[in-house]
Image (cartoon, rainbow, N blue to C red):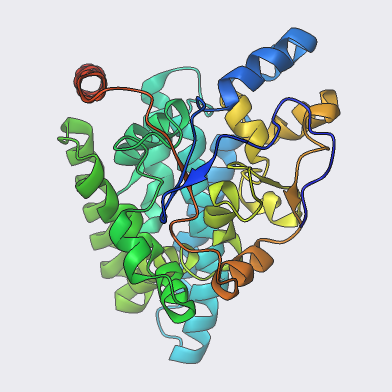
Length: 346
């Protein structure tokens, strides 16, 4: 997977330097500049922005399939149950995490409250409340990619210390759901608002109904499907592929393979960060319109291969991320005040 020559609009970051742990950039988050440059050449890309009418139907269909599956696996013996939990529930519930990702950008409907309602609906079959909190952190990941103390997508130093061996990295991948849940509480804690409590209440009630009608097997089919699907699973390869620096100088890399069909095209990750207001269903058109900005960039052909390389390569660890410091402590605190105010008002 070597980088290509002749990069346009996103050359390798020559300012990167390692401190023995992370790679530090002296440049701003790269995608805002790329967005302005590409739009100057192709203003028609703006027509791709806005909600996708198909998203709500994909969510409702998937939630319906998962409810049916939870009922049908209630009496299965454990080998069959595990097969369906890993391959079916793991894939479909991971798809719903990425539906929540779409709604975090308001790409299901035009109104904020309908996107939030659809996100919580997608959250039903996951069995673990996540929809509301995810949006708060994910939008900051876009605005302040790699910013120290802000972007919780970047692992903590303790993760780099504890999980740098090959067995450690495999365990780290398996425990990804735990790190994604607990890391924000350490690096960038946020006080919950009413919508977090609504999200929790809805999922608890949903889980109780699943347990009543589908038993423990049905409930665990959903909950463990979520956890397994975010761990060592082919679709979970995007967690590493998106921003871990497996290709020197590049902190965002796209994947154009078939697993995009069940992940709302999240593999088009340079395109997504360049234009987060464009839904996954139309991201491929960005690349078609402006191929000189994307075809020359390095890309992945397999998320499973990314996971294998992450574990097997000694030069890749949880530290293999780009970080930057572009604001003062006071500026970071003001961001949090504004974010909390906006969240409580919504």
